[in-house]
Each structure stands twice: as structure tokens, then as C-alpha cells.
Image 1 (cartoon, rainbow, N blue to C red):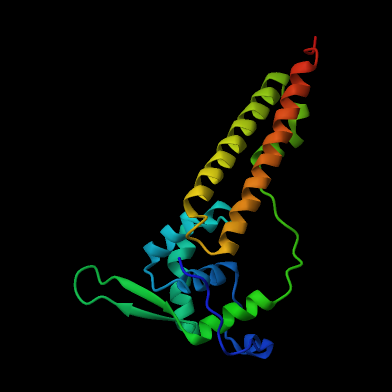
Image 2: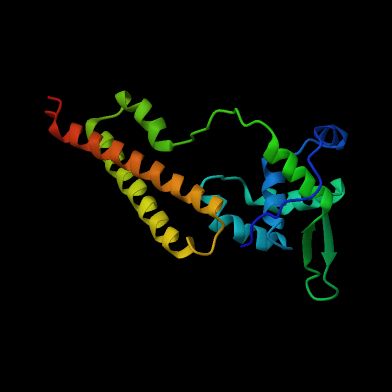
Length: 198
């Protein structure tokens, strides 16, 4: 994939206020992906699955609905295939690139959200039993270990092809997974060193 090319027009915060609708994270995902080239909704789904889908999850229906909204906003254009399945291909407009630039230039103070089922179960583990807790720790260890190894393998495939900032997101993913893997490994050792409840 190619890098996002700088737009000669400087972002103007006043323009965002003129838009008929407030854009959300999915809007910017679609705009960002279309900076790499025109795409159908299916193409967008595939691009996202292999890239940011590793750290930003949302319903697939949003990927199909959002381009239509962006067309109405004037940030994306739509070309409909004549005949056949009448496939719709979307392309980003100059206004769409500008909207993406304004978003990239805006402050990013939001706290990171973590939706981890393992942590949720760990929080309530006092109401379960020790065997369940140990199984949870082992499951989470294996899951994070496998994902970290997958990221490492993916890094080897893309490091010479992707832009450096895309590679950086993968490197952070690798560090995160290794850190959490280590947490669960230490927790397993702690549990296995305890005497079982009588």
C-alpha cells in the first residue's frame, strides 16, 4: 500500500464545523483506506481485516454503510458498474483528504480503551474456583503468545513494503502482546506455586 500523500491545502478547523454530520472513527478509517486507492466495500473490509483490524474492531456492517454516508457528505465519490452485480467502487475526494488531514492534526487525549474478556473474568475470579482461574490464565497466555508470534511473522512479510508508520503500529502490537503474555506467564507460575484450597 502507498503512503498518504500530503495535500497542498492546509487543514482549516472551521471547515469541520461546516459539515452536515460529525464524522466518527469509522468515517476516518474509510477515508484513510481510500487514500490507498479506490475500493469496493468488500475491498475495504479485506484491507481493514489485514491491517487495522488487528487493533481497531467494529461491525462489518459499518464498513458497508459508511462509504454511502461519505458520498452524501461529498467526501467520497461512487462509481457503479454497468451490468452484472452493479458493483460500487468508492474514491476519496479532495474534501475527503482534507477531512482526514484535519482529523490527523487534531489533539488525541482520549484514554485507551481495553475490552479484554480475560481481564473481565479475572476481576470476578473470586466467585469461581481455582481450576477455572488457572485455565483462564493458561488460555490467555496461549492466546497472547500466538498473536505476538503472528505479528512477528507479519512484520517479516511487510517491513520492506509497508510505510514506516504502518510498521510502527505492528511493532507496538508486538510489544503489547509480549507484555501481556509475560503477565499471564507470571500469573500461571504464581498460581502453580500456591497450595490448592483445602
